[in-house]
Image 1 (spheres, helix red, strand yellow):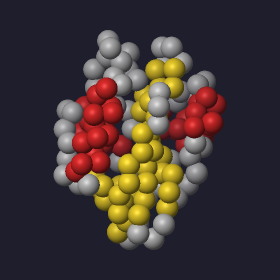
Image 2 (spheres, helix red, strand yellow):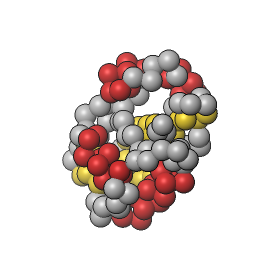
Image 3 (cartoon, one colour):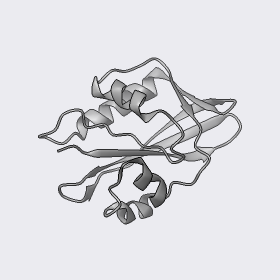
Image 4 (cartoon, one colour):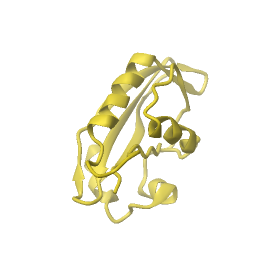
Length: 130
């Protein structure tokens, strides 16, 4: 059993971007707290400092399912980044110096997450958090 981590952009401006993440326990339906981190924007990419990634990595580790391994499952609003690469980093519990993300210009939608991997039976619970 794995917990699902969903990440989406909550702030866009010409120089900064902010991402928020929530985690979800499909076995219980519990939704955890929201974690936010901020980076700088270069063209259409967000670049996040190592300290922010370390904090986020700890958030993931702290909220793993007790019987699961490699719990970090990342989806972003636009579905436009290579989440397999991101998952590989978190599966290994690595903290990488920079994390370049294609900016999410879409709204976070049920359809996007359904395309990304399902969980659509639980997705309405996320809407108040977004």
